[in-house]
Image (tube, rainbow, N blue to C red; front, side, top):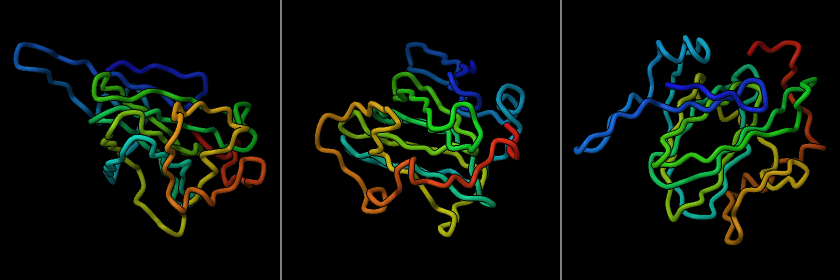
Length: 188
């Protein structure tokens, strides 16, 4: 696998080695050994999957301490724009984001470390999205910032028919948000 650094320290794009022939293709979608060597030593404990239609936007989510999560995400059917927003107090990139297109065609994965809010927008008719987490889901720690916050400068590439959950319409804007993450106490 190839690891591609992003403009923000922490999140990285992962491109697997794909072996193609007349039968189709094969690739390792995850290797704990290679991930430990090239990205970070993290043990993933939960896999999740969602299916969504065009215009669905999910996020920008995270879990509050002590149940923080790192994630590896990928789109196995369709295409999404995936985004990580730095919400670490004291970070020189606080409030900035990294966006990457993930699709069934490019097979890219995106690693989002703790201290980042995560969300995605479905750009294809349908998308199946999978992610690994290094902490179990804890509803009492579930939190987010507004996916529609214009101050974040994210071009979600959805022109109309935006579909949000009721929960995702209630998250605060970044300017009204008190982050539970502090860059001084976090290790990447």
